[in-house]
Image 1 (cartoon, rainbow, N blue to C red):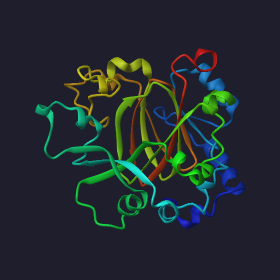
Image 2: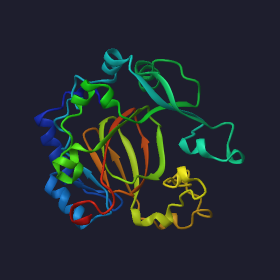
Image 3: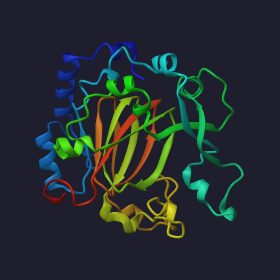
Image 4: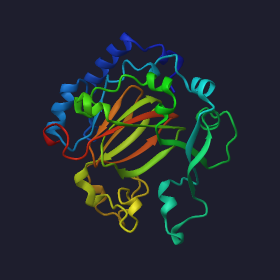
Length: 296
């Protein structure tokens, strides 16, 4: 999480500095475009319906990014809230829960919906204040934590104006889910049927994206209906070319999301997400392919 000095940099001065730094930094060819205003975002959507983009400035008013909010506050004030965790060993993820017995490894286990107190989870995994067995990880993934804790919901307000493609009615119908966990948590390469704005509140995440039209290069599961939107590729940085020869030809973009930044991903975007530090993110989902501005 941010240092004390960084936490003090919230407010007008921080917004001015972010505006300068994001407008002057040169992007590499495999980085997504960086956008600010809603109109710039909508113009980009119409011109590039399959491309991702980093949206800056949309979370400048969030109290959660200020000095009054820390994981310790969640633990101390809302620690009794019961939350469902994904608990894994040996680097397992949700794919392991659906593997055929012959392909399962005893060293990799995965359990969803393991109920614990939020305070215990924060202490053990986010703050590292308790001993955890080697190789064990826990992730509060895709959970509507904001509905459970209204004060936290208020701290994640207002909703980024780009959500719902700038349409107020659509923004009100948006699905909202939280992702909260320690460094190293990972969601494997997959796609969602909805447009997605991933808002980064605490910590950093590395996201690797591929356009919807590259589905034939993503090697999704075919025998298991639960995994049809998930790739069989274990690691996007170390894919076996003999098994996945087309993968290297896919249109890849990579970004590291910092606190206060959002990543827009059009519906159907294939993406892998890794937390590079303890991290709290909020996803906003709406619409489907072809439902954006001018059919984007």
